[in-house]
Image 1 (tube, rainbow, N blue to C red):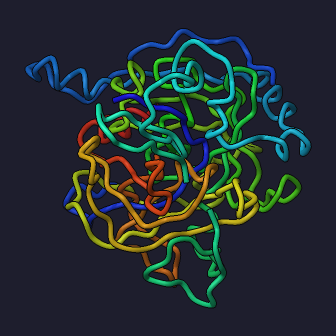
Image 2 (cartoon, rainbow, N blue to C red):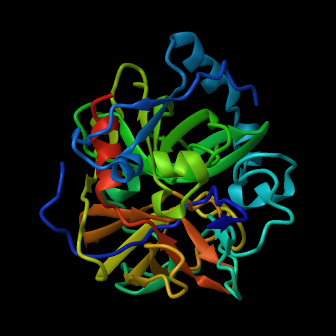
Length: 365
């Protein structure tokens, strides 16, 4: 699969009712990436092990590194950070963020493009349309006005790639360390290219001056092997282990959502994110809701949700079994890309065994 522009903006969506697998710009010195311990047994065939491989990057581990990242994100820098779909305007040689010009058009990450070897349109990343008095079971993009857990656990991500500052979305998830968030792979690592620097999560984001639950820097980052090696959209998932903020774990401050794997496909989904391209401005939590369907082009194993969210929503959680009254649900996917000829459908990766291995590695880190 060939990608064109990654979406560092996230939209929320995804598929299926939950099955039995429910489970509770000054970059610092770059660390050499290395395979992390993946949950794969020795007899597993090589091709399966490759899919389940987990690749790790060490981010801001020391107190000095953390302070440097926090100091980097001034209100002015946060306000000027751009959604990832603008990456195709940058020069580069590797990964999704560079060398995009001249690639076959097809898929837009966050708002990026894919080539199907035929008349397959490009994909793009995820925007905001209205503010209903109560949550709708079907909406292509509305402001989330109800509050609840999702308004705290979903947040905005700020990161630097290739010297440019970008924005995405992410969500806290339950895990042993109480420090894990899930987002899109392209919001963590530029496919086969470089890892993101200055990675910071702001839960319940309101504006550059409104950060009610603090800011959390990345301590360790994890992506699946197929994403790290070639930006495979089926594996566009990243998990980040955060440092504490003022001595407190993020899940202890804002709570965390359940996550599940190998859920049945289809079904009702609510997706959330912070779209930043017009008509949105990245300052409000937006949601889409409806039933998901498979990729009509057969280019991915992803599922699509009717959604007009724009870039900036990338990495935002898609939840099944979502309760609008409490804001609780089960994350089974996230906003990843759109096809250029259909800007009203967002696609998200299926959370199968590879994502499960990613989670089990990250939650114990």
